[in-house]
Length: 114
Figure (cartoon, rainbow, N blue to C red):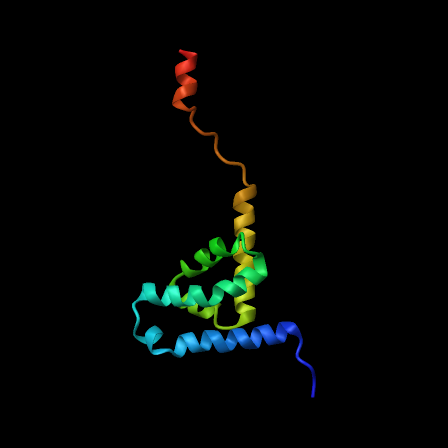
């Protein structure tokens, strides 16, 4: 017999939790918005472990905005969740690093020039 690593224990706990959500009566009979909320609530603490408390809300939001079938597949195992979180994190960092378009001058600035 072998000892389970912390990563394996996390993956196993995650799988049990997400499967409970997917098989619950509330999920099976719920409307799409409720399903997204249930999934988001379940995955949030795992996303937080992966990216920290500051980015977890944003990345969880990005994930639950996916088309429902893609969302459900993407969170069906811990490994898939990790991959999707990594992808969302990379996208978020790219958009934060991208130079923004110049903004229009503020009305106060143009008033001072006139």
